[in-house]
Amino acid sequence: MGQENNMMRKGPWTEQEDIQLVSFVNMCGDRRWDFIAKVSGLKRSGKSCRLRWVNYLHPGLKRGKMTPQEERRILELHTKWGNRWSKIARKLPGRTDNEIKNYWRTHMRKKAQEKKRALSSSPSVSDSSIYSSITSNPTVDSMPMTETKERSFYDTGGLEMVAITNFECDNYKMKSTATSVNSAIEQQDGYNSMDEIWKDITLLDDDYGIASVFGTYSETTPSSIWDYSLNTLWMVDGQEEIGKNMYFPDNKRAI
DNA sequence: AAACACTTCAACCGCAAAGGC
DNA sequence: AGCCTTTGCGGTTGAAGTGTT
Image (cartoon, rainbow, N blue to C red; front, side):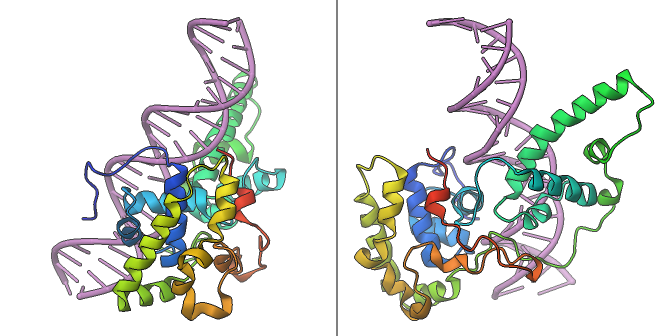
């Protein structure tokens, strides 16, 4: 049952851990989280690695305040689907279910309270969609949980196939690559900011052999560790391609 | 300046679904 | 079909940040 024991690290992630995770996700793809957790040497559960990637490290994430358009969309979708945060998130490129959930809790709860106050002071006021969708949503509650499987936005697919092939067919390569990445990471000490780290980490593939893992993928071998997934992002319901130009290092939050 | 209240959001937990054997 | 492992989801918590008195 994985490595979930008391040796596991918990709590906030360090920059070092982030770098390490990003490196290994780019090698292994963002699927086999238990595998990544083991191979990377991170003392984190696969679950924790996934969460960190999905909510914080994914290259396509937007940061900052919700735009009015996004707010309206959330409201509209929540009215429709209730607390189906991941489903709502798929319609809001760059936003995660966690982010939307948090946003809803803080902002909408506030609005609900205000609304409640307004209602108690003037009982004749009938409701708007905001309050009703916050307090209950019977249509949603009765909805079956199974439905057509949509591809999650943070599911980059990535180089999973390539990575798996390399790892499984060439155990030695896996070890040496992992070692290379780790030693590269060890040399990242002494940076003043994450920006510097991100800048340098893009060079890892040249300097430390990640490129060898990407070998069979040469046509699309990324110039940056992020690029591999960007063109596949934001295909929302087969619609437009969104956020193509997003670039994680500028996108990340300053720590 | 300090103490307290409130807000934000990263991360955890438990559960259920999905997938593999 | 049944068991086991992994993944994904929604709810919740708590530390850190910010505002107010």
